[in-house]
Length: 296
Image (cartoon, rainbow, N blue to C red; front, side):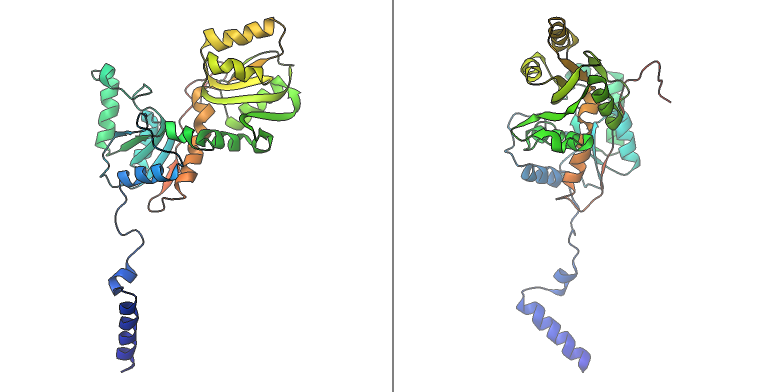
């Protein structure tokens, strides 16, 4: 009698709410998460309008694929893809290209054996790859810059009016460069300038920096920090500036390490609106090493 009364009361309550028992016990994520849904959530949460012309596209896989796990990375190298597959992460979100050109064009390399090997590996392991470059930079604040500043511990040194400009307690160029090298664990940083130069104002532009805007960046600071640049353009300009008597310097980190922490932060950001599957940052290996310090 008591059991019947409790069941009836429960049924009445559910009916009054317009719910069934099946709806109440349903798990929050009953339907499998798809690649398309992840991309759509990224578009919704990145905070800027999605561009018509962009490299941010699904490079491999389909929108209908079920996502088992998400890996973020700076560059979808074969080694990164192997690690992602081994961890069961079948959606790779990469900042840089998969197929060796910014636009991921495959026409020039369709007959290349390495391209075919990489493509076949991706297909065999059911990986989907999403190129996430333009809109992660376009986010405000820039997603890559946010991650790099956090990794370096530069938050309190940032200029609120100029996001690329930082002011530090005065130190030598050598000591400042060593600090960056240590924090980012760089093997092959290169520096142009007098090691004893006193530096205080720093401009940082992550990734590739060409002659323009490299010149106006340098004009605002003692030292310009970049990922990479043409040696016969901006490097030569800095050399000539120093020879002319200007107290300037250039620190070249390497493209990959100059943006890597931005994709580490991307994994944290994705977790804010994706809870159905595990999300993990997989670092790309720095490609270079020094003869006096060979890679073990």
